[in-house]
Length: 165
Image (cartoon, rainbow, N blue to C red; front, side):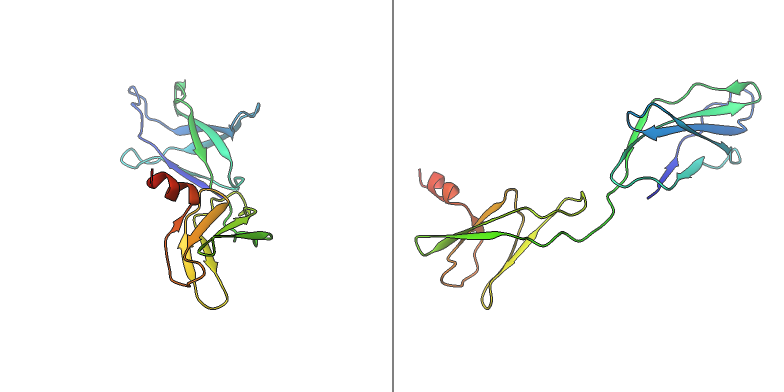
């Protein structure tokens, strides 16, 4: 995992910038790592790639310019989060089906894991008649007309009772 950074060149106050000092650390760590990179030509945007980072981790970074007179003031602290390593979600291991009045069912299952990544959608299917994609905010989903096999939008028993009041 890596992070590519670029920034606006600060004012050199009359002395050409020769390099940049970059301090970075995992958020909250006591020890800063330091890198020094040569300044690009005055018309180029400064850029640096910080590599070999841990996935799904917050990093703090601050940068200062250096000229022949010394290191300038460091930038305000920037916080950046690396993405999680992409992995497929684990298989759903337990599913309970609760049939309500013969016309709706509720699926209750343990939420699978995906290496720290957000699960965006669940696909639910039976052996021969129904395929519905839905985003789920909780571990429960109710599907109307389950027994008839016609497609419908997910709903919950509580939302249908509240809509009639």
